[in-house]
Image (cartoon, rainbow, N blue to C red; front, top):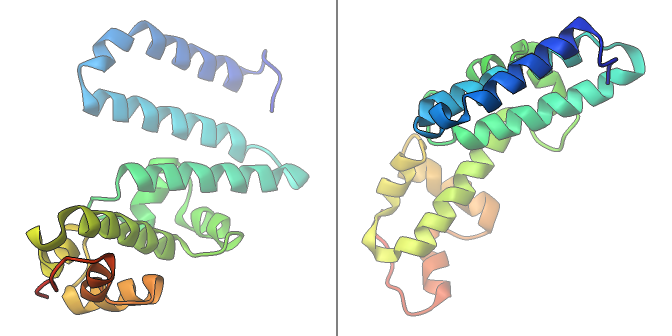
Length: 174
């Protein structure tokens, strides 16, 4: 990636050493751990952004991986947006969208699919103990019909029909 004596590499190494020295303090705070991860991602991303030409593909791939990781950590946030993800990764929204354009789905399509997968897992786990509306709201779908339409698009059936196909479970109330 870069020469170990380069100022940006030394800066990143010093940052990582500081994190290691304060690992006991970080262990007691989820917020501090998240801040350390986000700061490290931003530093690393900024180092990559200084690359040029043929190395740009590696940068876009690194941004894509960092963005997907940030999305996974924040999937339950109602305010998850391209702008927020770009801030978390330390790139511009345009760079973020460009990184996703090389993949099979857009940024928000990735968020929607991952939320549907989480909702699916929850649906299987809870069955009739939770309504479709509750699951839709918990995973930030506008309403139950929006959730059902997206669920059918991904899984080929409605949530209630899916549960029935699992056997022995009654139809859920929307």
